[in-house]
Length: 162
Image (cartoon, rainbow, N blue to C red; front, side, top):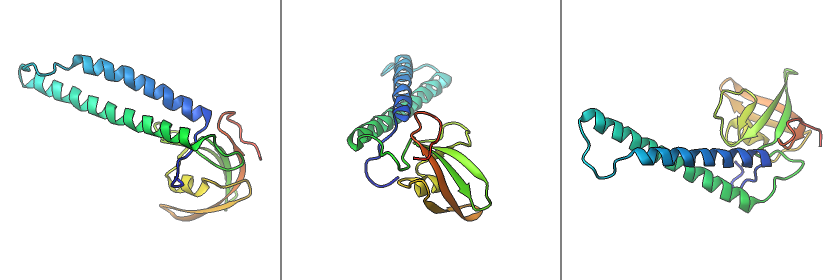
């Protein structure tokens, strides 16, 4: 990212808030199945208890991560208009004349080729850029150049040349 608090779009904020709500429900469910200090039965029971405890730890870490990101976004304020930020939809043209439209996200949770994380090489290169800017970044295949053709805020799902 850019080093400071990063704003997020309304769509990205809503997605994080929904994930946070879902995680809290899941955490409550898992926590209710833990026996606490009670003596656990056989090894299978012990292994199951350890697995649930590990799941609870994973959920707590993710909840803390999302809480922190939402607090950071609140400090950052509204996303900048006219520049690429988290939640932006960006259309770029590569040197071979191919074009791609991507959405800058906090994290890629699904195998969606249109999602680019803000901390990926392309995401880092695009953050803060405007329509018409040229970006250079490293890929596994080598250095790549792209021109920002259009930019949308992610809320309307359709890029526009602003």
